[in-house]
Amino acid sequence: MKNKLVPISLLVILFGMGFSSISYAQSAQTSGGVDVDGKWYLGEGLKKGDYFEYTLCEMNLNACTPIKLKMWIKGEKQNFSETLWDAKILVSDGNKIIKGSLGLGKTTPEPILFDDDLFDYAMAFKSSLAWLSAFATGNEDDRIHGPQEFKNAVWGKLGPIGGGSDAQLITNRVETIESPIGVVESVVIGWYSGNDNEIWIVDNFPFPIKALTYAGITANNAPIMYQFDLLDYKENVTDDPFKDIEETIQREELLECPTEFFDYESGRISTNTYSMMIQYNYSPEIPIEGCNIDWKINFISKYNDVEILDQIHYDIWVVDEKGNRLRSFAQDIGEEKLFNEFGRVHHLIPIEEKAGIARYAIFVYGTGPEQEDPDVDMGGFAVVEIEIEENPLLEKLNDNVTAPSKIPTWIKNNAGWWADGAIDDEAFVQGIQFLIKEKIIQIPSTSQGVISEDSTIPTWIKNNAGWWADGAIDDGTFVNGIKYLIEHGIVRVS
Image (cartoon, rainbow, N blue to C red; front, side, top):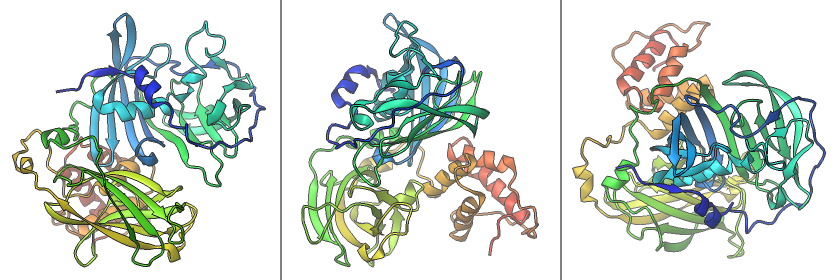
């Protein structure tokens, strides 16, 4: 049964923007203005049948681990006397697929109603894609927050978010960009207090095309506040694009998994190299087969037990009795490894292990800036053994829940990102070679083609990869595409 729609306004007041405990930078750039005629506001040109697809991260959602957000404007819905846009949503978050509805305002297309399952994503949507609603709305009678002219040097004051009381949102420049809506002239707006925080908008397009902004704090490497990129856009979509995609969130409900976490089991342990101390907290105290573990981890100096280390390159593994890696959380969500600027991490990790003792290794590659090789002298790992409770409901799952695939989640994520152009052909091919080598997918008897100078992967293969990642086609159809790559010498099998 679909969860009840609830209003977002009170929740926004209760939860706020999540910046109350941050120390803010003080510098600000205030000059702006571009020589472009016209106005823009959030939601400009939005209409029935519009389809959007974004990759998105937001600092309060999974510590800015990227998700894929797809949205289709089905039409309109009534909320008492107010008419809203009826937006159908599909979220791909790690190994979870969540479907639902958002009720978006007409004056400003930010979430006013949303399904319970979409609470965290609705908040992330409001704080990222709809963030400009505080400065540019469709209300022509609002002289302060109505449509904004591109020639206006300043669109509004930012307050603490941008750093200092004089921080302002300015129009900075015109930039030609290539996007799913074509090669377009975009106007870059932003604020420039310590970092270049920028948002790309296009006249008569409802939402920004892309953005990269940082938390307005005093730090050499401030964490990302939000980042997004438009991956796809279509008009006049009449059929529900998500009707054949099954959401995985039902699994938690059928297994009666806890979804709120209060009592945490805590401990502190040194890495095997004595490079640092690991303060861990997990909940529930006795995790349940097939459910989730909520992890909160601090990386602490071995010299000072109250000093939190920063710039941590890390991962969370499941290992066997000999310490051999069985599973990587980073790879499960499509990353090579994880990074945290401030040494405090929070992850909700699905339990794929059977009942009994599970060994979770908090693995540290080292420390240092995100884009540089880590200092391996600070590397090491600490193992936490946890008793997993048997869940008898696992054997009673009916056919309404899809059984877990043998193909690792990170491979499907790679396929989706490759289809979207986020990773290159080489990275995708390496993933396919891994599947074949490990015999995770079985390729039918195939004659291997000779390597040719033209090793371009056909567009239909990319389309298949994207559909397969979204669950729209089965493994067999996808494997037929892999067979084609082998026959034409694009993928080599030893």
